[in-house]
Length: 498
Image (tube, rainbow, N blue to C red; front, side, top):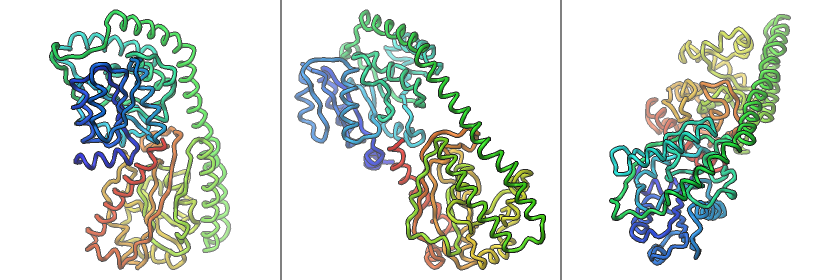
């Protein structure tokens, strides 16, 4: 990704850079200029500089220059920068020091981390081994890391780093933080107490020679302030941080119990037995099959409401002119077990390809089989007569082209089945995209998390249009690339709201 792509993507995701500075006349100009190569939205908070820093900043075009006369400390400068960024509509802020120790070339790494962990606080973890600062920095960092672990039960490799990405809408207590260096530790502690995910990424660090170094850290006074702060935070952890952690844990357990009581048990103990009794009376007629699909449609719409009540906020952004009454091949990315629920709330005339584990499930496999879902292991070619029958009876065929849930929530390799079925049956492809389900219920987790989920659609792709892309391999590649771009576009929009 080149610098112009990084600039565009940072702006689209609502990420700015905040640089607090105080008397950094020798380095601030270069630092800001380097950052502008990667980010077009830069806030420089001039914390009462007296050495010509202000004059240097006034010569740099395209930045948000915030200046006040009296030096108030780094913590105050950060608060001023956060407030300005929030008022300007930004969702995230990367903070950097103005003394030249941080490299603007690491900004793309923060962007990648933000795309992987939206809503998280990302820390740049420095390696000072082998530098002139190694001994002192390692001790100070180890001291800070220890107390952070005591206060939050989380381990981090570098709690003193100033190179960070903050989720601005999830800054807890930032208006109350102290004004000096210890403010950054407070922000970390409060974020952890309130359940903000913390992630570290490796960054470069440069310490200039002692004769060139500008440091406003006062060892005796500032170390005393940090020690007093840690004592206070340890006390606050017992009366505030720990209760918050216990409340979050209790809420997670309650959501799991509610999901079992309201979703799993009714499915196993009521829905499946009722269907079995109904099908045991007489023949499996077409009327019975339509009844089963209508029943599944209503049950899963209720399930979606229950999931919403448990904290998964669903938004249906499907175009109003999307017609589900016409049989088609419906394709969608696959992130979670929740995907099936949301897709089946669109229309009762929908059948899915599934895997053998679901087809043979002892609890709901009976329903899957009688709803005429088919295991993909039987082969698309052998299933074509069944698909043709379903389409003639007014059903759409839903296919996850990736074949399995994506563990990293990105678009995986597409299989050729969807394009093949659409071409063989001469029906349109309806592209749908789900975003957020993988974070609400991850592939490797049974815990339901509060999250936003959206479902979007694109115009149908006709068989004739698809054939212009080339053979089956090229058609499949076209669909995969379309979904990769589409997911990136939707994630940039949705992640600003996290």
